[in-house]
Amino acid sequence: MAANIIDGKALAHKLRETITEDVSQLRQDGVIPHLTVIIAGDDPASKSYVRGKEKATQQTGISFDVIDMPAAISEKELLDSIRELNHDKSVHGILVQLPLPEHIDEQNVIQTIHPDKDVDGFHPVNIGKLMSGQATFLPCTPYGIMTMLEAYNISVKGKHAVVIGRSRIVGRPVGQLLLNQDATVTYCHSKTHQLTAYAASADILITAVGKANMINSEAIKEGAVIIDVGMNRLDDGSLTGDVDFSSAAEKASYITPVPKGVGPMTITMLLKNTVQAAKGLSYFAG
Ligand SMILES: NC(=O)C1=CN([C@@H]2O[C@H](COP(=O)(O)OP(=O)(O)OC[C@H]3O[C@@H](n4cnc5c(N)ncnc54)[C@H](OP(=O)(O)O)[C@@H]3O)[C@@H](O)[C@H]2O)C=CC1
Ligand SMILES: Nc1nc(=O)c2c([nH]1)NC[C@@H]1CN(c3ccc(C(=O)N[C@@H](CCC(=O)O)C(=O)O)cc3)C=[N+]21
Image 1 (cartoon, rainbow, N blue to C red):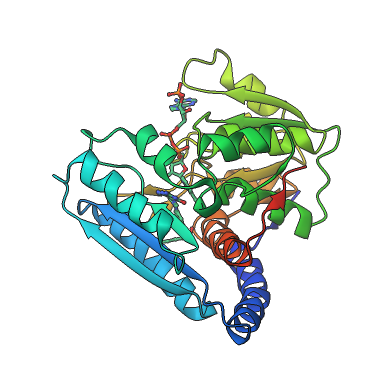
Image 2: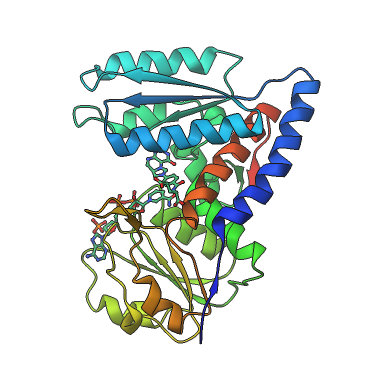
């Protein structure tokens, strides 16, 4: 079987048209949706992701600013500037780019962002709401994945979904969203025995690890849907996912490429969450 390619970039473009209309309506109503990004240090990959977010907000009419902090910033100073943004009525969304410098406690930072401005969906209150199926900001990458599956009419109900990776920002929440939609979910991670056997039993395989080509066709069931979240920069400067795309595409029914798969959807859902924050609403996680 030759797989259908899930075109995240094209879907992202289509969704951004609706977002642009929403922003224009909000602006007519006197609300200028605004996202503030905080970045600490000068990791080139983080800088490049933030530029991607800036470009996407500009394209859709969302107002954007970035607060650049030195890597040596104290945790207290970082938390103080988040508290200031929490009180600033012109700021609807706050995103602190991860990873943070090692001396800063990531969890303290996330918990300081007001849950109503947490457009990343990382605050424990928002995670708790997601877990209990209440309205909330969904984390952008898992939200983008669910949106892609829906757009391609891929039903998850009753299917075996295997998630490789259990991070708080990708693996865990995407598994929870799949479970909310009646998939049977298995999580795999670095301590999993027989990972290949689990992967090969997946109807839907989500890889969120960060290891180039760790999954090849041997670990894929005929007709499986493959969602590759991995972003790995190779020595030649090119980007690749966790899945060996060409061999996997021979067995899968659907597959996301890297780049132009999950990445553009992540940014689109951030735009959507920011507009939603500006409207003072949140979503239903069910
Ligand atoms: N496209 C997009 O929009 C986004 C892409 N990414 C990319 O997705 C990937 C994952 O990101 P993130 O979740 O933040 O990463 P983390 O590093 O936080 O998590 C990686 C996960 O992979 C697991 N893992 C590591 N090695 C293995 C292995 N050999 N076998 C099985 N599991 C393993 C880890 O297990 P353990 O828990 O046991 O350590 C961990 O759960 C990265 O490449 C990142 O760049 C991330 C965010 C957005
Ligand atoms: N607080 C926080 N929120 C995040 O959402 C967050 C974060 N920190 N830290 C890093 C990860 C990573 N991430 C990506 C977003 C878009 C692309 C993306 O657009 N990728 C393009 C390619 C980009 C390129 O060519 O460099 C693509 O896949 O086509 C990738 C990765 C968000 N993250």
